[in-house]
Length: 401
Image (cartoon, rainbow, N blue to C red; front, side, top):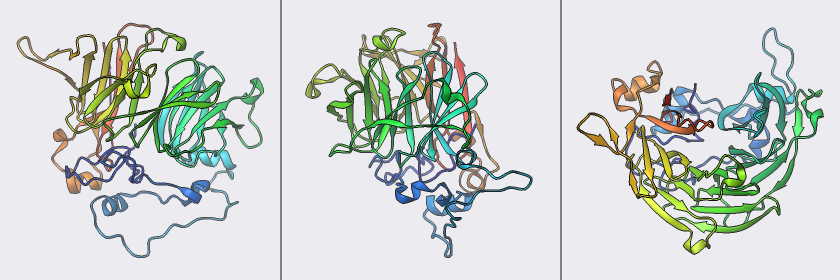
């Protein structure tokens, strides 16, 4: 599993190989200000230059760029033809050249899987359980699709780094038929309009059957009524660095039961919001991260327990009733407020590792980028991630029982 470690411009993982405070990544002090905008280039998937270890080293570690490097774009209507292969149509090319899976979501009936991509910025819908591609959204988003959430078996909402939400609906059963283009085109029903509060959307979560919350890089949580297709209010956060994840309090197994608090992770804190209150009084609690300044990378909310995954490789459990972390007993006599994940796998053959990190395998943490509890209420927890340094490749996964 490649945990998004080769795309420097996206910088989904903060470069902790250098601990200076001047990192200008998505996980930097100026959150999202250095995100790459595709602009007109976003309409052509061929304009993105492949990232190689050499180009990573030049951009990441401040060495001068070599002269003569330029992007080569084939004609707009050209196709990629490899030896022994037939020409690919438009959507097959998008499937073949995809850069970075940013979000996964399964519909309520567990028959479809939606996959949000960074480049091209589309959502591909697969049929479960054979993972047959069934449909692809049109290119309405201009930047990476960071979040996908299903409202029902046919409708889903997306949040993009271009600052907009999208509401999409798969067609009737005819959409499962492969068209002459290879996949059914899924068109957007509605798009949020950019306003003075619009910024790069890093996460989107459902907090009701038709209500969604979006997390923007500028420190604004926006509450949306998807039925009326309009914004209800903005909630300003106190902690605005490295805002990348949210989790709604799930008080029941149905979407209608998600009417509790909303946890928001930042660089050093987790903030608990109550979207039912006014914007000025919506902050209910906050508590510090157990990963120092390495950032809160993932969150899960089960009743009154908030589970946090951090960039330093810690998993912690916070009880909002007692306002304290649940201790983890490492021995019979000592305890800590977090659990540490294993070292996982790290690609030590890359030139970046050999040049800058050689011999430091044990010092490179596996950031926990996703947390998910088992839906059968058995208490099992799945965690996964990879090295937080964006120039390294590796992976980690575990099932906690």
